[in-house]
Length: 227
Image 1 (cartoon, rainbow, N blue to C red):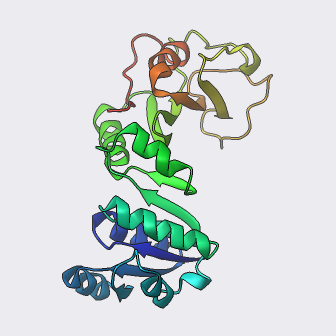
Image 2: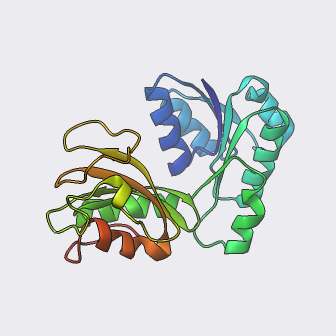
């Protein structure tokens, strides 16, 4: 696939590197000459210019791109780039920093395919590494929704119950299930929960603690959250 990424700072460059390692074609758009040089030294194709301008994105090949990632620290630039990408039929991903208010998020969420919060995702990774435990955050889906991977413990109130018997809290949903040391798949009603099994759950931040108590037990440490 072919991607255009706006911004070659920390977030943009790391994203581009991961995509390139997976065999995708990447073009970066960057306004800062020093960052342009750094990205070129790392072997990336870079178009120097303002990613909120259509002529710059045309030079970057937006007409043939599958998706556009607007990953600068400037929300206005990111949004303008996404709107241009939409015009050319691209999937659009918009970066929003953590300090923006909820109403700002809601305003932009309807206009793009996906919103990412680099600070929050970085914090998730750090907390998972530091705390460990039986619950690990996988990703933020929206401002108040998170996917978590839960490992069933011996203390779990649901240990020994079937999937059909698990009554998750409101504002949460079971997405996938996997027996210990086996691949995860679609949960079936007759699947039984046993120690070491894994469950992927989509949940509102407000009910994460309830999910923990239900699937892990009161003694577990919750390694996920909205802060």
